[in-house]
Image 1 (cartoon, one colour):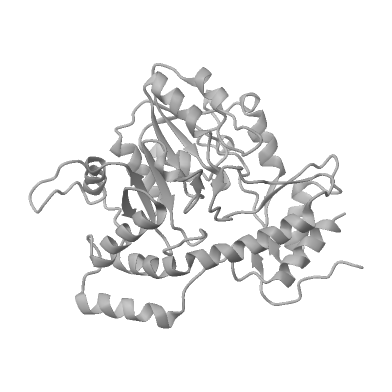
Image 2 (cartoon, one colour; image 1 turned 180 degrees about the horizontal axis):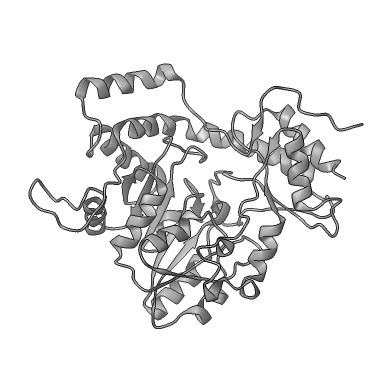
Length: 378
């Protein structure tokens, strides 16, 4: 049987924002219009922080206008200086947050199984100027958190986890977000839980939350006291209201994502030259934020880029998350740690990865068509 093109007018992207019905959102907007409270720690903001802390199983949540501002503020919160060891295999915002804080990124390679920063490469990169590790739970899979904590304790380092992919994911019996000194989240439109734009910092004690809340509101403690050189990175009331409504549907949205992921796995397993990404065995409540596959051009009929452009011809837009590596961008490629010889696994994975479309509204007929395009690629 020949491969059929997707005939619908709709273009299939790697993801599509999930939104509640407008009718459900209108009562929230009416409350905002009635109160005239649009921002500055309003009632919906406070309610969403409490609801998220309970839902995620964490102690303290501080909401932000977006995930990048959360990362920037996390680094300020812990007064990080000097060099920070991090991964080249992430969205560029991870490293940009270091640059904006006048910190020097030090890239180390990733491990091949879960694509996370390799703990065995970190120790040799530590210098007297190293103050922190900025790690990423790639595709929502937990880093080797115990080993990273051992390194941090031994060398007196802070750990910040960029957990933008990891909303709702548990490692064993605990939220991924309970590890490290701080974790940050993104609620961008592309994420399984979104507030259009948005983000958060997760911390473990009231004193740290107070500092975070000062920093995200210009440093104000009250009308006349400024406690720190803060910025304006607060989440507004409309974002918070949407988040409260989104939380009601999060579980069923993840169930739909899981069904799509299962269909991909069942149909694509065993194909020569195509490797499926498998979640960590200790990972619970996985959010299926991405569905990555890895193409070995030596044994698959086409290269990764060949498959990427083949799908595009049929209006299927996967994403090569993450390609190029952050270390290859002009801002960072001059750093000594950006040398490709030191990042061989990351270079290989970056050249092989392709994330397939996955979102709750994606129908199984389209999923099957995408699978057919991949299995018939030549």
